[in-house]
Length: 310
Image 1 (cartoon, rainbow, N blue to C red):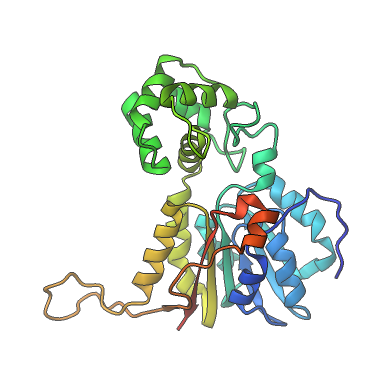
Image 2 (image 1 turned 90 degrees about the vertical axis):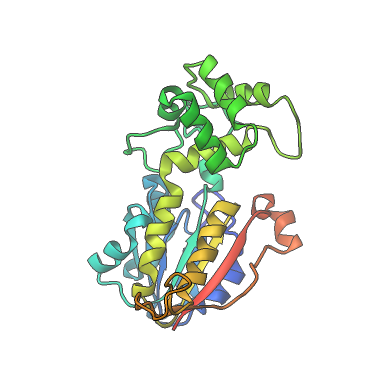
C-alpha cells in the first residue's frame, strides 16, 4: 500500500532490523508503543497484510494526529491511542488486544519534536522551556528549572544526564532565574561548563530535563513489566534506546525475566516462585550500519535489544 508524502519527513531508525526482529507475519497482531510519525508502524502494517493489526500508542497528541492522517489507508487494521505507554497492559486490555505477536519500543525524543519551534526540546532552536510530550501534562521543564532547589536540580542533571558538571550548572542556573527560553538555558549551561567537546555542553542537561519532565525511566519500567503478560508464545519484544540509562533498564529487565529463581544468594530453597518468561534473542546490542548513520546522523546512538516470550 503506497502512502503519499503529506506529512513531515520521518526516517525510522533500524527499520529493517526491527521488522526482522519482530518477525512480522501476515495476520499478526503488533503493538508500537511509541508510534511517533508512523515509520515503523507503516512497515509493520505493510508486512502483516493481509489480516494484520497494529495498536499504536503515543503520549504526544500531535504525533497521533499526524499518524492517523498518514496511515488512514490501513483503516480498521490500525488503532491509535493518545496515552502514555506506562499504561501498556491496561490499554491492550481495553482494546482486547492480547495476546500479541510483537511489541516495539522506539524510545526518546523524535526528530520532528526536536525541530518543532514551540516545544523547547532542542538547544538549537529558541522556544519556551516546555519539553512535555503531552501538552496537557502540568509539569514542564520551566517548572523544574525555576522552582527546584539547587541541590535537587543538580541531582536531576547528574542522575538523568550523567553530567559531571551538574553542580556548577545548577548553581549557575539558580543564580540567573527565572529562565524561560531554551537558548537562554543553553547559554547558561555553556557558561557554567566553560569547556567544549564533541557534543554541545547543554546536551546532557537538556536530556536530563526531558527525562525528568516526562518520567521517562519510570514509565519505561512500568511498561516493560506488562510485556510478558501480553506476548503470546514466541512473541517478540524489540526495544530501541538512545542512551545508557534506557538501555540499562532494558538489559536488566530481559536478564531478570530470562532467569528462574530471583531469591537473594544464601537462601537454601526458592521462595519467590519466579519463572523465566523471556529469552534474549541477541546477546549483544544491534546498532545502525555506517550507511544508516551517514543517511541519518541522529541514529548513531541507537541500541536495539530483542527478547522472545517462552
